[in-house]
Amino acid sequence: MRQELAGDALHDACRQLLARIHQLTDLRIDSVRDLPVPHQGASGAEVRLVRVRWRGGGGAQGEEDLAIKHASLKERRILQLLNDQGQAVPPALSPASSGQSAGRAPLLMPFARSRPMDRILGDPCVPTTQHAARGLAQLHAANRRQCPAWLPRAADDTMSRLYLQATQDEWARCMDAAAFRQEYGQYDRPLRESLARLLDFVAALDEEGSCCTLLNSDLHPDHIRLFGGQPVFIDWEQACFGPLYLDLVNYFTLETAMLYRDALAEAGFAIPTAAFMQRYREAGLFMGLRYLEVGLVNWQAGGEVWLQGRWFFHYCLAMALGGR
Image: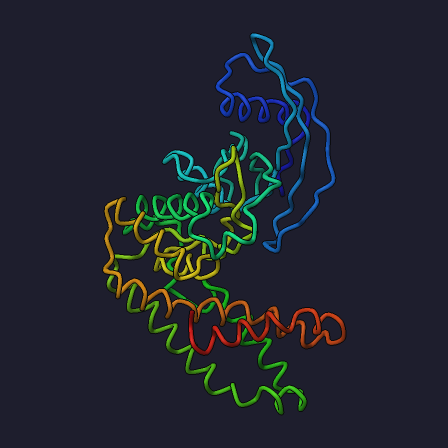
């Protein structure tokens, strides 16, 4: 049975989290009311949004929006680990009643409405880009070579762990249509070859081991938000343990990825530039082969959906064939 967070338990959880954030031992909750959720993510986890009014000693008071996510045990464990390490993630609280429940249970955290502007994707001079690169590098460095028993490895059942099978299934459906085969059938064999390359790439780096770490594995721009003016990484539902390069290609360009490489070196793991660039480019196959599914679904929908989304299909197709 799914656990709910309501009444006194909800007030107490809000008080604990906000007291930690604001470093107030005497913080009190005046009211908690539900708000509409502006966006429901694709992870399948239900998210509830509440607005909390609070007061503390010395006249301190405020009103803040908190998100309650019915998170998997894996995500709750990851956020506890990363919060304990002081990494670039939102402060999160899993109420004591959640325990180590194998099912989904409430996870309370600040709701980050804003996120970095699109232009930072390719601009290494923007401070937020630099902070995102440094935050991710420090997170990866702190968890490198350490795979908890409860965290799945990308090299074990890679097609499922990295959500690659969905693209293969949608490609097969599209190939049943003569119109699709006529226009895109020529890419069938090259895409199968790219998939084999990616699987070999993940297996080889897993065997080498030095660059394997805790991965978000779905680190697209909407999963990098701002909390307290600094970028934080959210949504760890699809996390696994694998080559760090897989967390770079959805967000960083080669130029901004070099900021990450430099920050990783400062954190104690220096990768030669040539090796880093080559592996970053090869990891681009992952982005293309994974998110090509979106374009394939749009093609099947047809009409305006395809017209508006076909640019992303061709972008992912080029990435799936040649990497970054």
